[in-house]
Amino acid sequence: MKTVIVFSTPTCSWCRKLKSYLRENRIRYKEIDVSKDNRAAQDMVRKSGQRGVPQMWINNRPVVGFDKQKIDKMLEIK
Image (cartoon, rainbow, N blue to C red; front, side):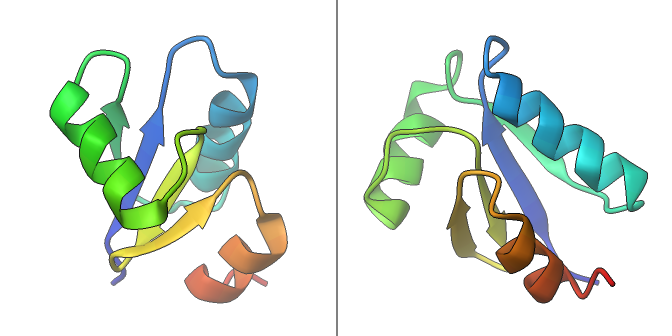
């Protein structure tokens, strides 16, 4: 099983789409609201070099944005 962490904010429409997509495909994930967790936000930027959300880490490898093809490949979604 892969470890999936989603970095998001409550006002981000792409974040909602990403989380909905993961739920539809029965992918379990941990969500971190970077608007409330400054340390997590700094860690996200340090690792990915990007401030934008959504970001997700799959087994500690960042995916910036809702890059469906990359997500499908990394999570083996057909």
